[in-house]
Image (cartoon, rainbow, N blue to C red; front, top):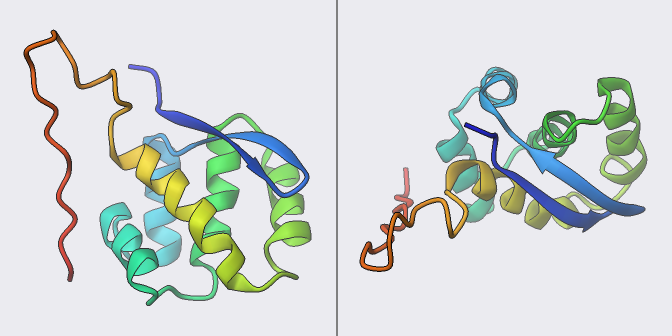
Amino acid sequence: MQSPHIEQDWADGSYRFALPVGQLRELQERTGVGPLALYNRLLSGEWRTDDMAEVIRLGLIGGGMKPVDAMGKVRAYVEPRPLTESVDPALRILERALLPAPDENAEGDDQKKSPMTILPD
């Protein structure tokens, strides 16, 4: 199965972000919570200082960028800016990793999509 990715405008261009299992594991180790708990933490505004930077950095790596280049982008466009600017991009990257693309759920015209329910902690 191909890893889910998202193309989005961010910082100085348009980038491909993805969080396949390897990046999700590293994200979990670095943030101390699972991906859904992190998503809820970002959504609720209870994020920690490095949460958004880790999602964006690992998303760039999962999308195909070299790790050193991803770190450079984060240092240039996340760390010196207000942290709240990075919440929305991080949420979109995580959401794409956690939810199927609209056509990945459909096996036929009759099948209904079942959205993921995100519950508070």
